[in-house]
Image (cartoon, rainbow, N blue to C red):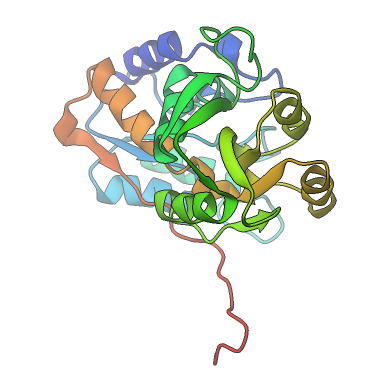
Length: 269
């Protein structure tokens, strides 16, 4: 299989037309005619992940987040004066690694909806974007918990499922049954969750005042962290690459190295 064939198969499954107009999906850098030796799947398209792909014997880096939304002015070695995507593209081109990304087109897929719901032991009913059309692709998920519980217990369930230390807004003992789920940033989707009758929304990140407002209006909020909320999508990338024809022995998952850390109050540093 060559790079162009993999990209074509992936975009047939996750069409570019499903991506946001501002998004950058598909092949960003690389030779479409290169024969694939291995595919490394990761959340982010960084210089470090380009190097990790090479170390694993892969010449394709398949990611969820694009290497860039707007192309940098130049592709150069690492520098404090340029965005990190400049160095990532430079390294990929220099070392012969093709980067393919599936971002908001994957976010809108049925696979993403099912994945997020299963992690919370919930049955997906529809996307959050199109609650009246269960078959339509759309961002987020509106789902019913198989085992309704309190907000406290749901937050604990989410912490385990996503490997996160979530920040929670709302009454800890509030019963939860209908849950809205959205990987990444909440944006304006809290309004859709309220309109859909959700008890709680589980997402990656949201502004302080946004979360405060939603909780005061009756929609509890569980914030997982942007990366933690979307890391499960890396498994979707791997499965999609294998379904497209990549040898399973040559499909590698790269765990996203934590690029931030937290301090517990009173911790001795």
